[in-house]
Length: 140
Image (cartoon, rainbow, N blue to C red; front, side):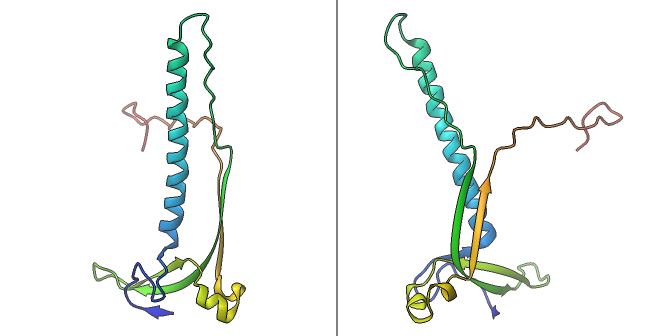
């Protein structure tokens, strides 16, 4: 296990990031893609509604990601990082793309240390209301 400040670039020129940041960025990208598809469908629906009666206008298509899966194979490294506020040091799992030199020397299996599968599925259940407090407002 290495000790020190995790740098954004590894010594071999590959990029590295913390696993949590990588997964959060992946989820954000899927949500933004769905938002773009929704905006496109809303624009098409407005065009369809504004079309003159009897004209040829295609109805809008609504797209939805029923499930999005991302498979990642990464080279990983556990790094101990000192806390900024003087608290205890934390261990972070840093990930980077597989280094081609490591693959050439040690083989692909030994270069890819972590396999991550991230699957996003929309929740199709209506949320339950929060119980009311004494003041009549939902509790936090």
